Image (cartoon, rainbow, N blue to C red):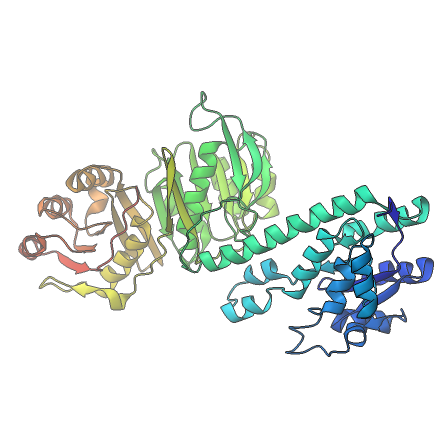
Length: 524
């Protein structure tokens, strides 16, 4: 082993060919490095008049299976792994005509980028699992005493400069490049295993890798220290990946929780929708033909509770919304939206304590995990993204719900799964205005009848003619009775209680239509 090595032969096989031509031209023309390459990489070099030897010429074996097998050959890996100061290795290399390979330039198939695309199939993902590249990378990294492994485009120029001005690549540089390479293989393998874990495969070892995103002023309360971590493998639009447009006052622990909850609600809706959040529960949700109407309707469901709220919307935040907030002097902590009109930003800049997050176009992550910690452990489940359709509804009462009631119940059902249990949501449709809105919410109660009572108290006269959605079954008829007193006309619930017959009978007696979904949505 020499302290510095000047490579004589380099194997080049990359997926990302950015800046490759200039790098390889310098290796060949300035330093006389013989270049060996594969497939598209060799073609690119040839097109740019850079001398290159095809790997099949070295191995005497063609690339096969559509390029799946190119470099997996003893003449390739022997040239990389042979120990230059080992006499037996050098003798065997001569016997088998294995030339030394002193540098390997490789980067891997874009697996992460592929799986982050909407609608990608498992077959497409599998084809982006690099085999030969990872093997080359590990082999060269293992033999860093003699071989330089180049995996990052940003290292091209510093390496050329070192070769020009220092007479070769130092041992420490080769060692550092090796460390980078092993970091890449670790991260690459993790992204593959996480992909399959997220598709519901059996998990024996839960290895969570999160990176520090920001240190927070404090946690839920001022006496609690807190840090925000992010999953580097998650590329979906969410509160973690959102771009901070404005934060004159730091985003807090509770802002992040409420922003996350708001985004999850509005992502469930295709129509323009706004959710107004307090303490991770919605106090107003509405959907309409335009986002301006949805905003004003959602905010006015419970304006008293909305004081100091977090607002989420699934369309661009308009200047009209910003002006409404300013004119009415609404106290809003944070707004999340796919984007913000410039006019809205001009108005919001005058509000010192308002934070703005731009998520980009919202879409569901079908493999989203929900992790809850307990002392000494954690619980992991897949997020509740079950979609109830009209075909799932089973009418269990003599009175059949109208089409408008079904539409309102489906809206309320989407919202209730995001409310802390025991929870009920009252909703109405206004067909003439193209609006569906929450009337009142009962959240986080130990008894379901109490959740109903609290919601009817909040909703008052507006409950008349509304529908009710419950996150779980009614254990007794009392919740139905409370809803009837307030003027509810239809109920959607999972069913499944041992007293279902009693509950259904009471609904019939009170003239309330009731449908079962068969799906519970507890949220603790």
